[in-house]
Length: 491
Image 1: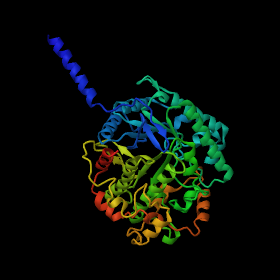
Image 2 (image 1 turned 60 degrees about the horizontal axis):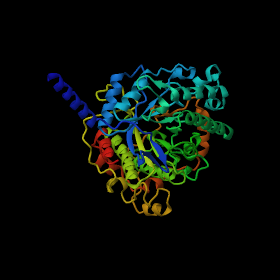
Image 3 (image 1 turned 90 degrees about the vertical axis):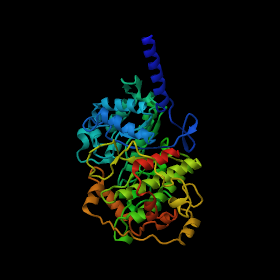
Image 4 (image 1 turned 180 degrees about the vertical axis):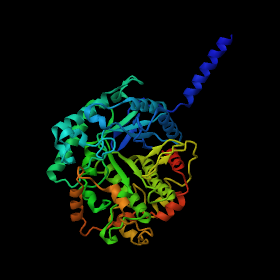
């Protein structure tokens, strides 16, 4: 009798645990027109970047579970992480923590985007794939080198075909892995036409390799969302030099399952009309809103692709927490509006997530320490309010490059120069300077040539009718976790 009672209790406990368990990945996220879909329904998501997940020097199983538990509790659905290391070029990548992260994500009802490489030195840059031939070379040589391509393609195939001993499934067969970025931020700064052609050919080859190996998962370029020099939207870039990066929002999106962008204040370059001072908070917030509006419109219109904001955030090195929260609220508001209208903007991933109680250094200023117990904010994400002013929403008639909306915007107040004029200080330059391998001198030469006559696109910013001060008053007092929880409740 006692044994029967114990068994009955065990069955009830098991049933209860199943009842409250998060929805675990059983189907692959796919694409239908300009939307991501899951089981035939539109799929919209919030989430964040945790590039460190598989780094044995800064991560462990407890940290992974703590992060995923907090993320799941505030409604996040996707986490983006690195799936490469300096050893990847030689075939020595350590899968141990990544295997655990995939299994833990499944248990917590989350999905992953795995970046397979990096343009930058962190965790191993392209020069490692050139091996002994890297001396004196630049990133354009990486794109052109057949040997480097062979090594990189082998890494792509090694990751996608790897069998996770904790799940018994190959990565390519696991719906928990939503997508792969073939590389993070595939720039070719200051490259000429032939070099850009090699870069585009490299992307084509790696996308084809990833698709052949993992046909059921989304394949992305990891691009940052700059318009190329031939785009009709090139004047809407965050600076004259953005067209010199070798990143092309439209052309890259055509290659991939979805368009991507990485939205940061640091890419909004100084302009001659401001004596080359970087823009401040007052100008950045409406520009951010307008840039999202335009990127979504292009993605969902002529490109017919879903649009994912893979990275965003406002650094606390130069702005305070309330300003960072206000900028995040603008991004999340645009995501909620997209869900409401069936738009192309499918998800937004903030940089960068840390689990509760983390004491990690915040030297870069982007850390977001999750609070799993946060209550949802009530700032009105997706309502008319301060996030659209009189200018309309992400999919409204007042698109940021529409002449009629620009005319209407002129009746509004002119955006002021920020009271906090941020100069090109050494700390800013150190963050953004490209080294010789990443063609810093060539990029500067290109940017200087394009800067003649460039002015910050005030009409682009004003078209949204967004006031930075009003957004900060509404959302600046909310925590990041509470903002994400409100957004998740509306997706």
